[in-house]
Amino acid sequence: MDNQRTLQNGEMVEELETSVQLIIKTKCPTKWVIEDLETGQRYRANGNTEIGKMFTPITK
Image 1 (cartoon, rainbow, N blue to C red):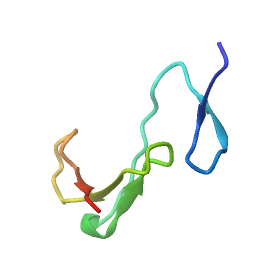
Image 2 (image 1 turned 90 degrees about the vertical axis):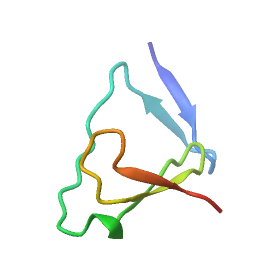
Image 3 (image 1 turned 135 degrees about the vertical axis):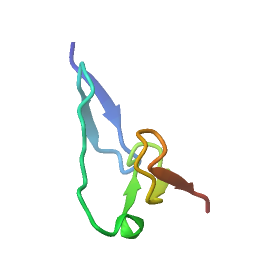
Image 4 (image 1 turned 180 degrees about the vertical axis):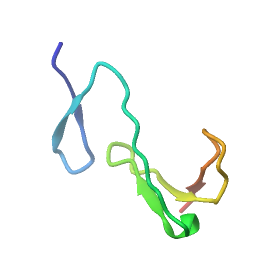
């Protein structure tokens, strides 16, 4: 199945059938920010190493 998602800038991107891991290795985690280009939500790494608790949403 060819699933597509639309990003906020109008770009179409492929949705995969299964999830993948995105890994960042760093000695300074709190300098990192990730952004969901579909929703616009941004998250900042907080230094926690527990899966699911590594990022804090950035509120505008």
